[in-house]
Length: 274
Ligand code: ADP
Image (cartoon, rainbow, N blue to C red):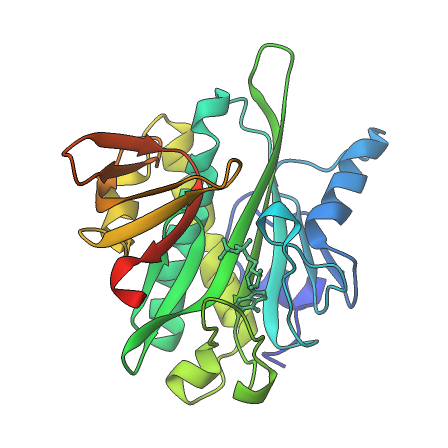
């Protein structure tokens, strides 16, 4: 029962006011972000409202950033996308990823009682034995109106819930799941309900103009560490100490010469890993 994520089960498990009240369950889909995009593109009377959720038990074209793939065996994970219509300035878009990663961290702590954190900018990590391993990721895709406002934003999230060790993907950042890290299966429905509840609350705070940054930064595992950051577009690498983030969630990196860099997006590796 607790493994069923159909409409009726989810509607009776959640206590949100608007988030996920429009909910679409699919056994299989290419990508939940793409499906929501298609629903938006139709632009008819049944335009999906803010808070619409598309959740799938399997994605055959799951994506990370830069068209990297997201792999998860059927029925083992939480794979979902949420539609927002924030009309925020574009600069504020990352607040959605921040709000959602905070919601995920809190829900995982509550349901699985694991040591969990965020790897800047968009990975969910769990500490297993002696290292941080990747247990989830977020992908935000937005579209701007003519005046540069965030007209719609689709927030995709994948969480490795009950993936057994032998089915974890072989990725450059070692992967784990809540099952592998905690040694027991976690009910996906309870985790989903906890996540959606917290996401609605964090979004509403952000909607009132308050950045999630102060709370979010406390969950960053990268803080105070010596890191390399490879810029997502140019491939250029900067090295230094991760000192914090600004209110927009951009990483503040102090290089060896003492200069402070503000980085909007990139891939982080810890220097002592090499
Ligand atoms: P990055 O960690 O580089 O930001 P993304 O967030 O874009 O990466 O996620 C895609 C990457 O995550 C893939 O290139 C792959 O290495 C890894 N990956 C794919 N599926 C999973 C999974 N279920 N768990 C952990 N890592 C995964």
